[in-house]
Amino acid sequence: MLDLAHNRPDLPPEIARRRTFAIISHPDAGKTTLTEKFLLYGGAIQMAGQVRAKGEARRTRSDFMQMEKDRGISVSASAMSFDYNNFRFNLVDTPGHSDFSEDTYRTLTAVDAAIMVIDGAKGVESQTQKLFEVCRLRDLPILTFCNKMDRESRDTFEIIDEIQEMLAIDVTPASWPIGKGHDFVGCYDILRDRLELMDRADRNKVAESIRIEGLDDPKLAEHVPAHLLETFLEELEMARELLPPLDPQSVLEGHMTPIWFGSAINSFGVKELMDGIGRYGPEPQPQRAEPRQISPEETKVSGFVFKVQANMDPKHRDRVAFLRMASGHFKRGMKLTHVRTKKPMAVSNPVLFLASDRELAEEAWAGDIIGIPNHGQLRIGDTLTEGEALKVTGIPSFAPELLQTCRAGDPLKAKHLDKALMQFAEEGAAKVFKPSVGSGFIIGVVGALQFEVLASRIELEYGLPVRFEPTQFTSARWVSGPRDKVDAFAQANKGHMAQDNDGDLVYLTRLQWDIDRVARDYPDVRLSATKEMM
Ligand code: G4P
Image (cartoon, rainbow, N blue to C red):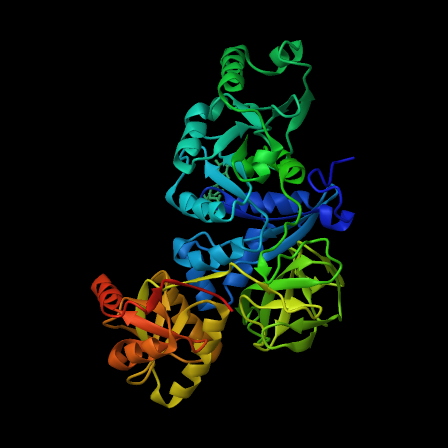
């Protein structure tokens, strides 16, 4: 029997068995391949290749998706649930491309742990580092998978050192690779004293496990070629001397990461990683909220929206809010309170995202992710409860780094543009600013590619061709301070002022100089580069 609640034996078993996590990696490290193997072993798909194949079929449906395919990126994040052994895994997919990092940041507020995938030949890459820093802000536990060990890879100690140095986290080997590149035969499972041998002939075959009674066991020499055995034993001895042993508490606090070595494409090392997520990954964690924190075991249901996706199915103009359950046992049809508007909301068609399709969620527990179809009432950052006025905090909104004006290609349709832009703003795909002076909208994004995606989606989903054009502004800051000071400031700087899609006041800037000038001339006015979603 697996230890389901190693850390919180007091949790109800249904909550204790949940593991909600995301995979962070640099593009090409193998996130998609690993996800696919997770789903395969979780019984959510029947054969490898299905996720990609389904992706292809879906992508051919539209130009926008065509663009996604051309770029080789995944624009939207989605959630997938599956069972593995006694665990319920909720895997929240994050877009890997840096242009979509804001979406990724928010996704990471909905998980309790992250799996960091690195390429054994490349080590820690830029995007991995960026995403890691976000995880660190929240002290998320991180489990590491070093992929592509079937190819020529870096020295094992060098990889571990690099992670320790670049990411300032202790690394403990959960397995140790034997041989490199063509010579790679498998791994020694340090945590369970087992030899795992990779089958190169069959990519979908799970490794053969051989139980080893200590390193003197003659079975080692039977299975590991002599020229690799000596190096392996030396390395393992050194690793045991130099590297810290696994400390589960330190992993849960985000100070230590266990590393597994493997090859996702060869199905190698994946099950060991999944076992590790169950064993060392955290159960659903308490959520920061105002005026009090929410604990998962509370009997009353609560949850928060971390993502909104519109038009997931072009045939049905639906909008789905992704809700992370923070506490309780949700049942379909429950009436919850939408805290921001204080209105009741009957959640009658919640969906659970199983890999192959969506299906109605009859129930959900703290830790789960459910989708709630709605007509725009639910926004990112919203909290749903059974009545208590709680608000989950810590979901950030970032100042855009690029601004452009958006104009309708057909002036007769300009009115519809308004609606389309607001919808994308609520989805979190862009910031929409209405300048105080002049007409039109200024759109702010974090990465340039988002303009292209927006233009394609507006055309595809609303039949509206649009043009994006440069503006004199480069960024925006949210304005706060004493009412009279803010009013005076806004009055004197009309040409810079705008409202964001929530009606909050922003100051559009051209250069850092603008910001410095405000700090100097209006000491009571605060300009902020982030805003917490309400
Ligand atoms: P990503 O989602 O992180 O961007 O990576 P993805 O899984 O798409 O993998 C990127 C490439 O690396 C793919 O090759 C994939 O087959 C390959 N790959 C993944 N895991 C392993 C592994 O363990 N060993 C080796 N040698 N390669 C691996 P591709 O040529 O870009 O795509 P495909 O034609 O194989 O689909």
